[in-house]
Amino acid sequence: MATSSKIRFNTIQFLCAIFAIIGLHSLVGWQWALIVPLVYAYFLPSESYQECALQMLCAYLVLFVASYSLAPEETARMLESLAVIIARNAGRGFGWALPVISLLFAALMGFLAGVVGSGLRLMLRNVHKFESGII
Image (cartoon, rainbow, N blue to C red; front, side):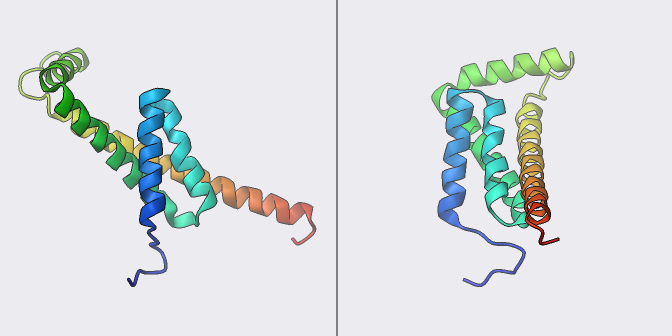
């Protein structure tokens, strides 16, 4: 399979990252799920932040689908309640907006965690080169 030099995709790593995000989100908390894209981008090339955004998006999509599959009425009621809390008039037909905004927010979080991870990798690599006298 031919891919461009900027986009590199490894399905096994990608799926493992998605399952890790889902596991951390479900068992510990959503904020701990950000560790996965950060570490993913740290150990992989600097262009991996797009993959990190896609990983978070896919993981949150799986979580939404699981919520709707296991408890559709309760999930819909919860989303409508949250929409009413966020904007008083949003409860009338705008319950769909909250999952969409949440998915976009998840992609943004994954993207930013990937940028931080790849930036951290570049920064630490330059510090190591400086300390060893290469620079």
